[in-house]
Image 1 (spheres, rainbow, N blue to C red):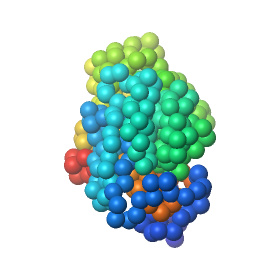
Image 2 (cartoon, rainbow, N blue to C red; image 1 turned 90 degrees about the horizontal axis):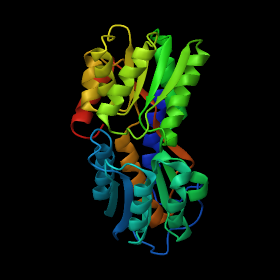
Image 3 (spheres, rainbow, N blue to C red; image 1 turned 60 degrees about the vertical axis):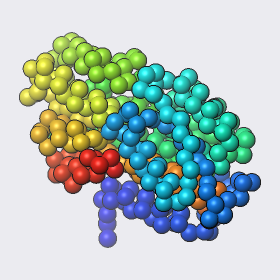
Length: 336
């Protein structure tokens, strides 16, 4: 049977979960044996977790729900250090990584949003014999040598978004980048522009410095771009907060009938906007799976030396009006 791409992604993730429940070590990633702590199946494993905080509603809290569910199911104690909503920068991530490493967990789960700027801090765990699982943002993997990586292929996610926008009739699309220092977000925008150009239409990137999570800055920059280039007829936002903000800015500019808006990532608000024909689609990377599988993989490696082979992709999956209702229940209970 030939499966569509989205189904294959889901199947590969499910197969990985089944594989990790066994006790036989798999090859791939960093080879080796469990850490010297040598936890048995009955003993509690301590896993450090450094990523987004619960304040990042619609994403960070969903990842944490996945991590906590995996911890409960697998006798894992989570040691968390979370990026606050302000500042959201490399220095804060570096500090939080070090604070968790100092507590000497059996394994570390980390989101490396800032690539080369923060990879050395995460790599210190590997140097100290603490196995690392990268999730959500997985740049700098070569330096860190993770035993597993989970997340979305961000450039491909941008390509998927650009192709969907071109298919919808967009002729001049802009990628609204409110976090232009994050390599994963840069990759998404570059992918979108590439897909639009491959389709023979225009694509540009609107970089808004220091605007991650800043609704006012995102809205003002979007309005400014629409005013300076009236030919823009498509906009791709970055994240569950930014999607509705960008649409509202388009509507306030009086262009809701001519500018199609889409976003990366899903929340119940994003899904409501899709159902109400305000957002064309969202690109779903399944953050719950990223949190759950990362903690599961960390625990299984410590206990048994088990690990997946290569990166496990949890996205991209296009969510539009055809499938938004199915995902709504998961989003409302923090599992989307």
